Length: 177
Image (cartoon, rainbow, N blue to C red):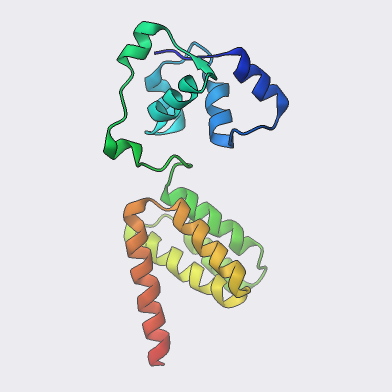
């Protein structure tokens, strides 16, 4: 399948607004009739087939009838997958590094340098938890909550329970002192 933009897609992209989110707009830009589904999956993530199908169904993309027949149909397990941005430890690390950069003191610089050093998975999760705890102690409660939510959105799903456990163990250690 090599999806291409329809007139509706071109009009929507030129309008710089509308009902499409950034992810859908990016998909429309990348669907130039030259890229195949495999390449789009590499660029957009594993849920690209569902995104492309939805854009075809809504009239933004066109695909040949034979290509549409070979497109994978969403299974119940696949259709519940999140369609937001891809999750990664790198994205989480970059996000928290940016938040730490706003605090121009030695301790914030220490946490930022630790996040930017090459760490194994376990050490990276601990560094993320430590940096988050530091930020939560420095900012208003509402901002701290938003930072925590954005961090959880950026982390791979399998890392979220570990981060929560590390944060809980830090809370327990603080309560004991």
